Length: 165
Length: 368
Image (cartoon, each protein chain N blue to C red):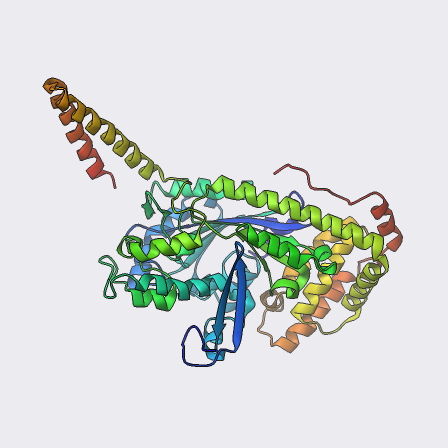
């Protein structure tokens, strides 16, 4: 059996972890197990290793030359480290990451704490949706006076949204 | 920083079994390279941006703030042994820092794997209290720093395993009863099936040294912070009950083995002249169990809890003010233990038997 990391030496270290009833296995050669810190159980998390290997495969499904426009991070870097380059990488590599996150987490969407800033933006976009709907309705009903007022409000809101991060 | 933190005093709820509770948040600045990817100059710029904001927090009024490059290897290791910084953070140099309050209940690592790792550590089962503190600090900081946040994915982190809440909540449990009755692997498996992780604090599974285990949430996306905390607290309360049950069964069915173990641990710790870290942890764990069961007076609890930390390699070197090799450490470790145990009475088995008649000393109640 070949090592899952270097794929050239014979595997000598066999790791198994049961996660949410799913068994995951990793086979490593001596050199790779040392490099990954498997010999030191205190500093080692199988999840990280599994993540590194599995994650790289997932992300490879995307375009191979993709590079993060903000930080210059590539998929090859992710394969090496199992970590991303910056927050914008989540957008750049969204396609591959989504599958990975789905397998890794309980859900696919954040339901916890919002920073106040994000909270404000969310309120603004909620109001924007309501206003747009009202505008469509007003136009359909040929209620042009209301429509004009709504359009002004939307413009103002767009301005606010653009200035909030 | 000369003495241990508040969590070492061991006065929190269920402190016999739950040594400490910890909650940490991972946060990053928007569109700035994560510490592992950032070049040195950018890491330093990020540090300059974050550090003053952290130092001016009301919670950090009386704080200890150090650049990692200004700490010696031994000082870093002392912080690791007190769980105030991570092993990964200790390996950092230029461009990283740590800020912590004097009570050592709050510690903030700058440029660890993420730009900010904020953690609160409390004695006993106090996950909610730990959460509240970190949450408050996070809310203060977000007014001054723009955190990387996505409407759908939540807080964005260097490692995708932390994305969402960016929160890891954990508790350190002392489970000699479950280990001695060989039930620990069952517990570990059951817990891992519900999306929580258990690992030995030092070493894995039944090999865990000092019968110390850490239980934490495995996932961070798709569940609210308070849900994660209450789920974890409930599971910990169940484990506490199982540990008490295991101890009762041991007292009733295997009392001779139990008294023998406690007696031997006492004998070896009192008279040995060389002791490895592993042996010390395992024997101290048995003495701690002895205190829980009444074989030693309650006021001996703190000295034992302190020995768990004071016999760790860096703490030993700190106390002797010099770098020691493994052999020298083993001698010094044994010497410190012998000295502290001088004032320790012999184990009183009759007291232990009485304790067992009264049932276990403290059952979990739902006060968390």
